[in-house]
Image 1: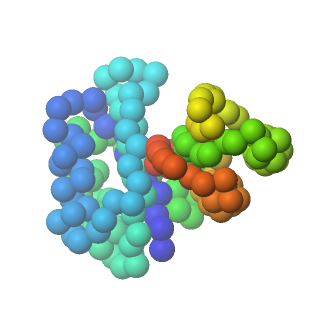
Image 2: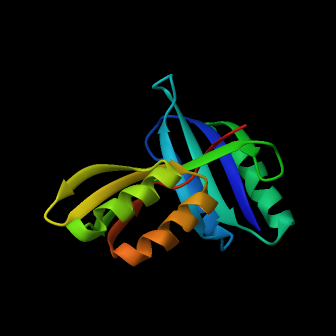
Length: 156
């Protein structure tokens, strides 16, 4: 089961490495990680997505996270009501004959073209992971040349 964990930390050198180390020491791969300052530059928010089947080990990790000096709060959003989003940038083929079809698809998802050059377009889309999967599936017909994703962010 995928777990979305939010960790509020003091914005200090080495905090990210110590937190990532807790997951890797238990054999868990972090599938998504987004970290940035909050409105207070001394505080950062980490959103970690991890696939964990053993709830007991995940509870141990969360308890160990809470014990780290630089960690202020730990929240598991998995079973709580929350909003989550991810941003993608995708470079696709955009030939003149398919331009109208691509623009129609982008309108459907409220995505937009941020740059167009030499029969390629760079698209921007922000949404839930399911919407991103659906859009990427439909974009395959145009030829995805490159894809960058931010990782999930979440807020209760």
